[in-house]
Amino acid sequence: QVQLVESGGGMVQPGGSLRLSCAVSGLTFSSYAMGWFRQAPGLEREFVGTINWGGSRTYYSDSVEGRFTISRDNAKNTVYLEMNSLKPEDTAAYYCAADRTPWGGTKDYEYNYWGQGTQVTVSS
Image 1: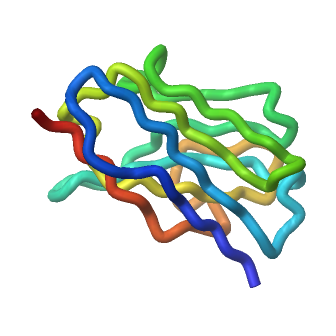
Image 2: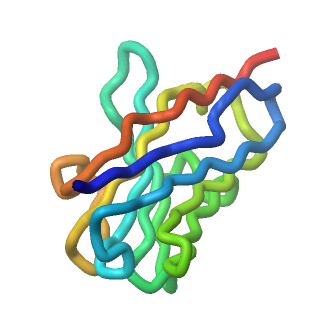
Image 3: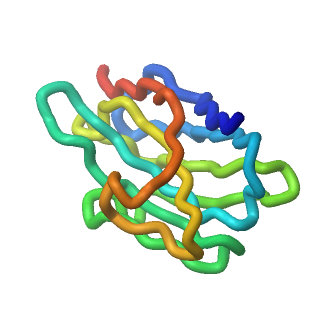
């Protein structure tokens, strides 16, 4: 079985920070690109960022560039999303996903496996 389990979500004030984790099992983690997506109520699922097999390359959406950082630890089978300078518009359910190709894309249909999501709420 393949499992992706997100953790680290919660409530935070504007300007605050959160670190999300995604623990992966049931596949060869180092052979998968990883991505993060988010979905707010009433909106479509939105691309956040991706990281390649070895963790040497990352790509982000314009809305999070400079504030969010994706990293991975292949020895721990875990991918992270560090979120800084959070804004109310960042409020959403956040999902991690795995892609069997070396590079993850920006479209959700390009990914093979998904986690269940973790809620991030940014408000005063």
